[in-house]
Image 1: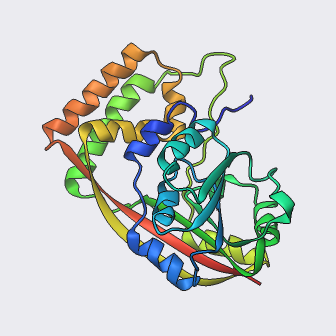
Image 2: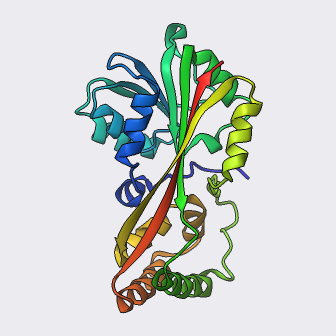
Image 3: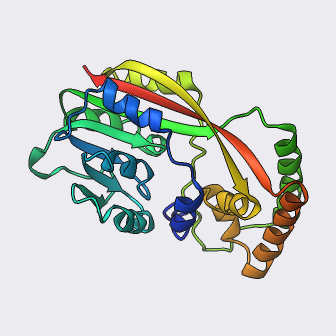
Length: 271
């Protein structure tokens, strides 16, 4: 069955509730790759421009390649005030740089796992200048929940199961492309090294805690393609009922859910 873009129709929610990246992470990228203000940066899968803006605010020249039209639309609105930032809607696997352009750094935030492993490293290698850098970073929720968050999340999962246990995608309706985005650090490290094209210079971890209101928690779930696919099979009335129950649970337990995120940065240099 043909799959639709993972973030089709949910790009605005994604931009509203997904975390940005630690400022220290951005500063480390700039420092450890010795980026200069006139260097040319290529961003793969910038989405709504969360990481883009963090680099653009510092004056860098950035070109983004984004598959999702809805994501790119939000990106353009956010980055309109940065004249050195541009975007193309295209699949990175199929995209070709103009006039064999070379980049000083290629980076990808929370998206490199979507790409074909047989293409992405070779293509990045070819697009980079000699001694250029490939910089990859991801985040994931920390597995060590607080007791309060654990209770809330268990109750919320019960509500979701109640509404979705017998749910099936309507016949003929395409599902979304989905990927958990979660991999073990050693798997990512091995994949980069096994390409034979890049040497990992440094791997750095960061941690940040984010507090979300009940309404933000509901939106955060809707920003995940796999869960959005489930909602694609439900009518608005049922979704509203489920949302209301989830919000009531969170409000009955203090009104906020704290989530700790683990961020992982990989800085690799072209061999």
